[in-house]
Image 1 (spheres, rainbow over the protein chains, first blue to last red):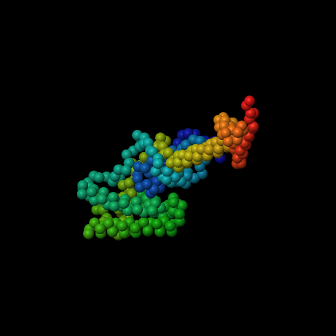
Image 2 (cartoon, rainbow over the protein chains, first blue to last red; image 1 turned 120 degrees about the vertical axis):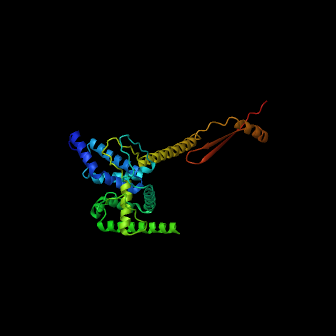
Image 3 (tube, each protein chain N blue to C red; image 1 turned 120 degrees about the horizontal axis):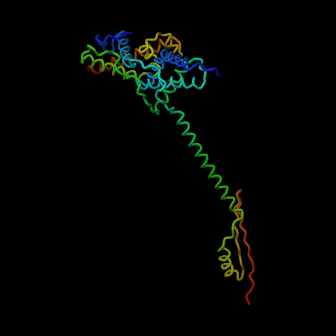
Length: 181
Length: 132
């Protein structure tokens, strides 16, 4: 199905609006798969680039958001054997989003240690649970938004969120107990 | 959910609120800041699936070509025995042997191998003229 393509300026504006609305979500899906912020960003950028190319070829995509999420999932799966090239205009990423001003070195160390423990536990969780956690805590999505993004029902979101939180609490507690002994 | 860097981090294994704070802080840290703008010159991701599909397809084609070559060779080899050339030294050897054993008989042997299986052996024995 083809249609007369809109002017390039209009198409570019639509593209940037889509990026603003959905790029973080696409990133979250990729992050849940790979637990790597850089890789997830590359995948998200690639997904949007492919959308742009589809538009350039005259394709009509009825639901760009669903299309982007699907492409991101496929790209994340194919990532194992892929090579990425970063362009120089990309902003620095995977840096602390929290300003370090006023944080003592000891607090910084404690934070890093806590995050390392969280990361280890997250890597042990199923990808489906990580997706729910990423959307909830990175994007601050509510239950309905998570359900819509992952194409599951609200009950499933609650169940996965609860299960993931409980697992995390148990594992962190166990690690805390092991370290204390 | 906002994270106050000045507040102490929740202890691992703590309450649900503490887990929420910890997870919120972790994921906010992981997200790129500032968030990059839309770019049309992003990284190129090579689809590993497509590449592996092409590789396995090439392998299958190579295998099919090898098998076809083998079958064609076998058929050609089988066909080449339909009209085999006379074994050049054979009649002489048999002749001499026959001559010695049979006294003046010339013999020729043809072995015919056909593509469909049966092997035919033709033996011709001629009586040599008696020298004067």
